[in-house]
Length: 565
Picture 1: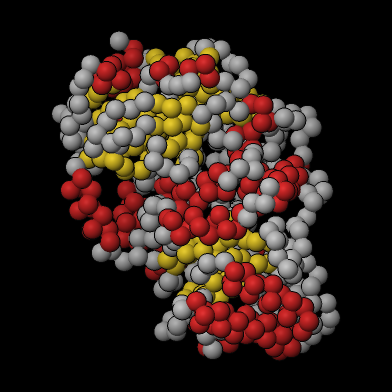
Picture 2: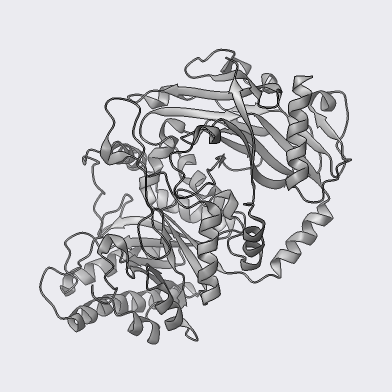
């Protein structure tokens, strides 16, 4: 009876949020499927019999390190069930907490919306899932949607069932594969390994209806969305130097939600792949756990001759998005020196010639000043313009050989708190000349003067994609971050994640203002992944409706739970 009550709560949640699902549609369980029943269009399937996953020896009824824990819980309404979870911690050897991936055998035909039910805890705790024909896993995380001012979360926000939308897919011939996120790292730097999956919900769709909705969406106004990944800095999160830890970072970019990927290769000539002009990136000796683990992962790539840049490029081509290599100038460099400008341009143009990329991005928001001598503003303009013109000319030459245009993008501060709100021009960036002379193809300003650059690009060939980084307001100020401390006695204060941030609705609202002001697109910087609730970000009309409803896409918060063991 209690299990039926829990099932009813899940179905009610479905009826409230899923379009075109009739209240009279059937609800099928594992038992129904085993008896031979077949879901019809509109029916819901709830999969929660995790005891039948294999390999079965990877599951325990107790909390055992290196195994999944099938743990009993009850909901606030009195329903009881079992959740598959990981609840471990090992700071020194986090890999030892990893359980084997599981396979959930599913014998279904037809197209389904797939949702994953998980548990919300203070530090992530979601689960990785994929279908048999998928190349890698996608992380399903129960993001907090309370936004700034609500961190740390109150007790009633924790231990709640949360449904995360995965995707719509043809289930014919496919099983569902479940993996613990490489979570000793996914739970930041403190050695936590936490993962939860309560159930998988599949709602059968009419393929014609799916195609019709896709066609309707294709007619809508679409803005560009460029997403930045900080290169090797994220690899240690997955805790392995296998290829999968690279391509998994790109999985959430494959749903039509992202136009292009901006992949940071490093600063100056630092790089972690073979390059005639390059030098290996830092050794990770700075003291932060994350930097050390990043170095270990990148060293593993080098030692095993894994070119992670080539893997990134190939995967972007497979999922149909553009790929730019992004480069920071480097600390204490002097762009007044023509030899340095020549070195940097030759370094970057080598990559443009030898990888199938769509262009280069120059990152001006990191490590200024770019001169080691006193210069007038015009002199600064002249030197940086000379550098960008070298890159422009080189990309045009390479593009001619390849038979297509290669873009040059520039990201820069435009009045931000971490630079005392100084303007781009003060540090030597002659944006107006870049735009008027088409030296660059896209500018990505960040801060309180964004509107100035949107207006500057109106009627021009150069596009403007305003940038917003995690931890920053849309006006360039600092979000009132609450740093979360390690519960242990020896936490590293320099490596604490800043959790309080805008929720997906607040992010969408800020970007919509940029769209309404005339921006061609937006640039998402330093967000760990493009959250599922932001999948409609390129479409102003859709996000306007979502904001009016007050409900984020693909995230349903359900009942609070209580563990029974």
